[in-house]
Amino acid sequence: MLKINVEEYYKKYGPMVLRRCRWLLKDEEKALDAMQDVFVLLLRNLDRLDGFYPSSLLYRMATNVCLNIIRDSKKMPETRDEQILYSIAALNDPYSQSMDNDALNRLFDGEKESTRVISVLHYIDKLSLEETAKVVGLSISGVRRRLRLLRKKAKMLQEKIL
Image (cartoon, rainbow, N blue to C red):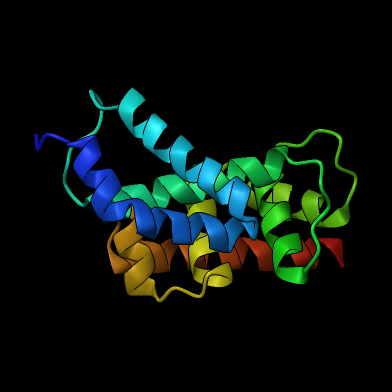
C-alpha cells in the first residue's frame, strides 16, 4: 500500500480539486469550502485509502462532495445543467415532488453509487469514456457497459410511462 502524504497532495492536486468544485458549484466560496472538505475527508480515511491514482481519487471525492452539497442545498438551480445535476444529486430527497426526480429515482434505483457518478462525468461533464473510466477506476468497457445498461433501463422506464 502506497502511503498518502496529504500536504503533498494538497499542494499538487489542490488546484485540480478547486477547479472541479468551482465547475460543479458555480460559487467561489462554496468551492473553497468543498475543496477543504475533500482534504478533510482524505485525512479521515487515510487508513482505508492507498496512494495509487491520487488524481482520480481526489477528482471522484471532489465530485461526490460537491454533489452532496448540491443535494443538501435548498437553493433551486439557475440553469438547465444545474437542474440536471441537482436532479441527480437530490435522488434521496424525500420531499421532492418533481417528475424529473421521480424518474431519476426509478432510473438509479438498485444501481451502484458509482453509476450515478459515471453518468454525471460522461453526460454532464462531457468526459470521454476513457477519461470517465480513469476517474472512477473502471475499465472503458466497464463504463460503457454501465452506461449501456442505464440507457436500456431508461428506455424501458420511458416505455412504461408512455
